[in-house]
Length: 86
Image (cartoon, rainbow, N blue to C red):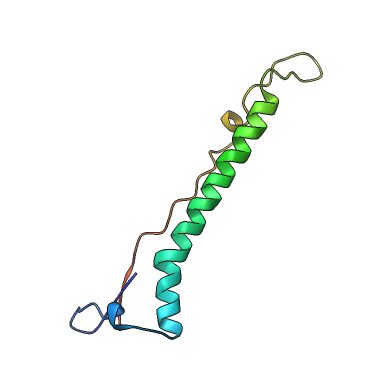
């Protein structure tokens, strides 16, 4: 996220500390890394479950296949940077 003054100048680089700096850091650094970690966790979980289900059949003997193919793909997209005026 970029913080701009009324003339459109980026003032976010001048912030050294405080709540506003913490919020900017959270949205530009912490959240994208957390989202990437959650995506990896979800993909690893889906791969493990699919591996366990591979070759499995239901109680009538019908192959069930891949769980991920029956549900939505585990994916979270990082937020796009937003521009804000101060």
